[in-house]
Amino acid sequence: MNARATVLPVLTVLGMILALWYAAAVWMNATWVFDQAERAGATVTWAEVIPQTMSQDRPLLPPPHQVAAELWQGLFGQAITSKRSLVYHAYVTFKGTMMGFGLGIAFGVLLAMAIIRFRVMDMSVMPWAIISQTIPIVALAPMIITLSSQLGLQGRDLPKAIIAAYLSFFPVLVSMVKGLRSPDQMQLDLLRTYGAGEAATFLKLRLPASMPYFFASLKVAVAASLVGTIVGELPTGAIEGLGARMLIGSQFGEPLIMWASLFAAAILAGLLILVVGFLERAARKRMGVPA
Amino acid sequence: MKDTASLSQPVIEAKGVDLVFQTADGPVQALKDVNLVINRGDFVSFIGPSGCGKTTFLRAIAALEHPTSGTLTVNGMSPDEARRKRAYGYVFQAAGLYPWRTIAGNIRLPLEIMGFSKAEQEERTERVLELVELKGFGKKFPWQLSGGMQQRASIARALAFDADILLMDEPFGALDEIVRDRLNEEVLKLWARTGKTIGFVTHSIPEAVYLSTKIVVMSPRPGRITDVIDSPLPKERPLDIRDSREFIEIAHRVREGLRAGHHED
Image 1 (cartoon, helix red, strand yellow):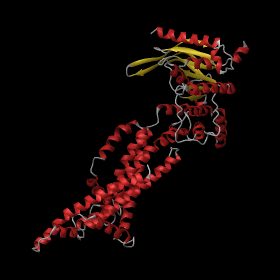
Image 2 (cartoon, chains in turn green, yellow):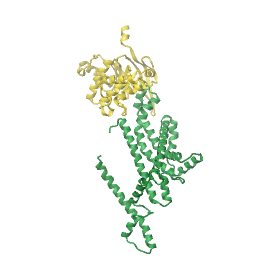
Image 3 (cartoon, rainbow over the protein chains, first blue to last red):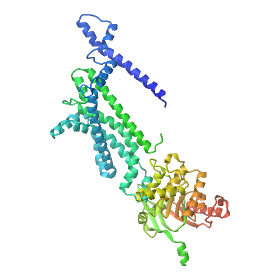
Image 4 (cartoon, rainbow over the protein chains, first blue to last red):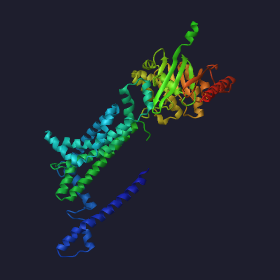
């Protein structure tokens, strides 16, 4: 598909979202304007209300341009080492996401290998892996953080990574089990006629055959890892990371900070998925998939 | 006496081979009392309707299935031992090339597993690519080749490690008639040049008669041999030999054998 054909629909949808957002902002923020006017004993017309819903300090729903300004200020308005810089907080979240992502991949792949190899693992581990994903992570995250500090672990990096890995290992596990099992009987027989052992079968056939499944799962896993990291930053005590920033914004009644952090997280997620997509394309090219 | 013995060395010997599969619907007799001797340099075709055990017998030779009773030897050893000594190359109905490897990479696969040196891998790959007339295609990926070329590559892969016995399970079954004719010619040339013993499963009568020195006719339920025909056709076989009187006579005998097997149902 050419670029023009994709840009137009995307822009149309974006335009509709912005229009809806502005309408909602007017509607939600108007309440405050009317309250203020009533207290002052004055009456206001809609023509007067609308401009006032666009520039409040603490709007119920900040309109897009306010969020954009706050985001711009957070990203480029100060030194990136500043505690008020969103770049700094995004970096903290990014670091946690990557650690959790790596941990999740390693755990997911190893578990998939064990499940493929040992039938008893297939029957015993898989149900638990599925059950693990039904537990809400917001309930689990504070426990993991408390536990790790009880164990004398300094800082939040490790518990955050564990929470992120808890979410991101699952898609990798499911895909890898499917991928490692994807070679058909004929391909396995072929290797048997060469007298190939288990290690050779794994390295030459199962592992390369699973790669398309692996990369498909990475996009889901990296997004899950980011969500996990942000949730790991929410429990009280955290002062760094986009999750902490969102919580501060909501607790101190600074919706602009909250929304700006939210969008920073969205941008980070977009970038991560872009990078994973790029890696996937590079790997596919190396593995001879037609462009 | 001594002369004939050296001329016809038995490579594969089956004596009273039975093979029973245990399935959910009870036991299925895939092979019943199969007796057959295949000599060095023979081109043997196995022909018969589906379920006659032709593929099962070929797989048993390659130690992919194991007879429930009787004896089956390859080069005087059990099929499992023969496999460890790299006695056979196996060609399946589908080329089964790894899409993530180039053609040369696919041919290197058995060589890598068997631990050949890098230099020897290169040398052998080049040689077998030439043998199947795919010289210059080594760097292509499988999807860039036609079905016939892919199957040639899979034959090259089976030839790469110099097995004496080449087992082919309906290798051209999925290809169109014209490509199939051409590949049949090439297989004969290959056989003449390498002197390998070839076991070839097919359900095409012309293909079996055209290729073989020995045609084994099989019939189903239970899978068994109903006729073994030693072909009087010369080793040199142009495609138009298929119009010769001898060819038609053998084809007729094969057809009769297949029909006889069916009548017993």
